[in-house]
Image (cartoon, rainbow, N blue to C red; front, side, top):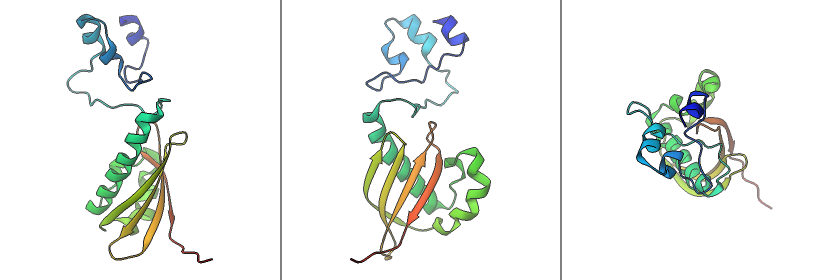
Length: 148
């Protein structure tokens, strides 16, 4: 186990049911090797093929994004390469109260489509795509209404 960790094995990869290696360790010595130091934040990777876990995590990431929008600062939720250019583009979304409606999740692309309303304004739909670290990489707004 020590050799695997020294070679760069990722202790954050998930098993098929969403457990970390630490959770599956057969004895306390192995569990101690796999446990992260107290200063490290326990973060689960979204690169897992565990679609049931992603069905739960992705809508929560979308909720956190809209909470940060309401607070006026989303920089910590954006991937590093998008932080600077996205701030100006996202400014119309900041400091507004959102009411989230239904969500639709695609686990393959780590995308959540959210139906929401902004104050008394009519419904909008946003498509949010996240990277394997749970940071926003893409946001598309759909605001046009079509009547047939």
